[in-house]
Length: 603
Image (cartoon, rainbow, N blue to C red; front, side, top):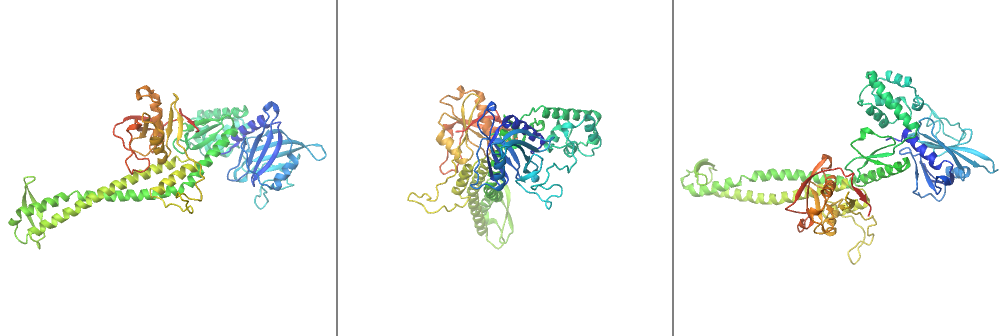
């Protein structure tokens, strides 16, 4: 969800309840558009220290409470020094939000150089490219701002020292918190566009997601025009609007992150966040949070990780996709060539029959009809009239031998190309689940060792053949560890290197091995603890199979066929690619890709 007015309302309520009355202990400007303010809340609210993170970056404006520290420059910028001069040791009197605007107003009380009590305001505007952090005096005059906006940049409002501060009303939107019943119905009557777009254009604080949620709660389709709504539908939408406004006024917020299934994390890649329940995200996994700050910090941290890893793995994805497309084309061509060689036995029969009955073939004949002693039927044999029957027979034998050699060579090549395609698809699947630099490092190393990627030069080597430049400082990537509902340990390999590790190094022979049938996917190990398969609850098998289904290329199907057997019956052929195994006897189960019941453990 966009950082809309509803999110700001929930955040404002949290900040007032948490740091209201607290004292500003330290102010640091960690970036040109970022501030980190360390605050000591009142003793009755737990005391200690909290950090308020304020960011006015046009691409990603943010506000939330955090306990994570950030590195500040040795020399503080001028704006930071100004805030330190006036707000250091000041007391936060209140945190308010004007209407449902995306604005937070911090009222700070402090003493000046003469010891007199003064009041200043710190305004944080979270408005996309217009975001800013503005410092005001007690008369709402701008003292300074983290980003200066002159008349050359904006004709609506200058943000410069000495200018009066005001909230520009450029879109003439209404305040939903003060909207009346008649006013809302009037908006619907005069709207000639779909409901969600009309709400978005008519009221402050509404994002597209919030507007779509109201329409969904009223059982209206997204493309339904407001002008075509029946009186009953308008009443239903009004009812949902009033319930939402009441929820905001009563500060009943429910911080939730909505994650897609199947991309990047155990709960999926973050799709959306909200402080209200989003019923139209029912197909996503809901992850509840204790506070808006915890939600915002985790959502953008996850989003940043997911985006960064996707960017860092772009070159690997491109290489894998390019080689895969080339191999698939090569494999199709080889299969067609093999099919062409399947008629080779016909030429062998022609040669044998010509050797047997060639004496009866007249000279210069273009064809002859001979008895096929293999089938007992007549067969017509084409001839080269310039050659003798024996020479025609030798020509057919040569063609047969040539096609036989071609078939044998192509059969071997297609097997190699098919194995390479399977390997590449397993790498492609592993890239989908990479979440750390360590994951990418392992995949890159596998691609180098398999010849898909040229090995990078890393400097001279020592006596043991190791690079002196750096044994990699990339954090070690480990297999995923889950705990089943019954307390059993489940391990998942995120790539082929980890698949080999958990299957042939971590697992015991009596542990249970799971894998998606006939498709790329992770190896999953269920630690049996010496128990037989009959002694392990069925629910554990279902949950382990769900992991194998989720971490496979068939995760979008909802259900995937999973093979499972004791690990001691899983073998790795000599010289096989990483992650490749064979097995001959197994059980099968149709598993769902929902792993929400499982708990991930950070080892």
